[in-house]
Length: 178
Length: 88
Image (cartoon, each protein chain N blue to C red):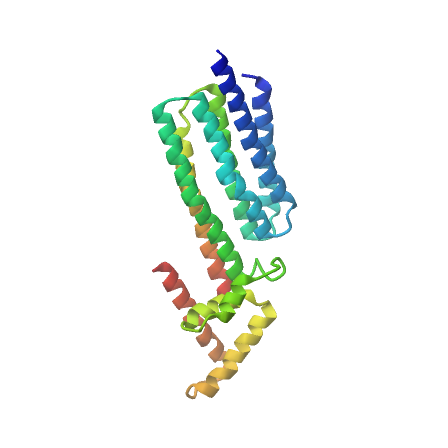
């Protein structure tokens, strides 16, 4: 009798903690200014809030099959939740949505600048979203002005700019697909 | 168990789901919408678990397992789309 009441109280506390974490993440999603801050807020209940709810289920339903299924569920969530958060942050950085306005220290840009240029497609694709829109236009102008001086005789410059950009895109997507 | 605990848990999960829905509608970029949609899916998983505790059954566990396993696919696909769209 007393054990059941203690387990009921623990179940209620765990459920309330899970609900509180979800509500706090919702408030962070509403109030935070940037996409990366909202990502920081919403990735907390994906593991910890779900862990509290699963603990409540396990306390109410103490069977081996249920607890094994809950352990599998938590392991799968711990594997897949960082994948989605990492992909969203990567797409935001490369796409320019997470820009220099929302970052105090851009360690990835310093690492990209300090890295030796061993692959053209990789460095160009990583440099583009780090800069602003004007900087990307300037860099494309630089590439367009550099290429006729370095390479052989091509046609006019406006046709040269897409030919310098298109192999980057095809290389990038093929490397991501493969 | 006390009914008010479950009412409070339901209200907290409802607040979380409504705020995520607001961010899905009002999100300035598609990444905000995807973050909010992940959050909404996590809230749905938590609500399924709380409902199982309230009614004392385990019939929703396969649905929770499938949701937790495949929740990342939408974010990954949309993240790839964002990368290609802004690079080209």
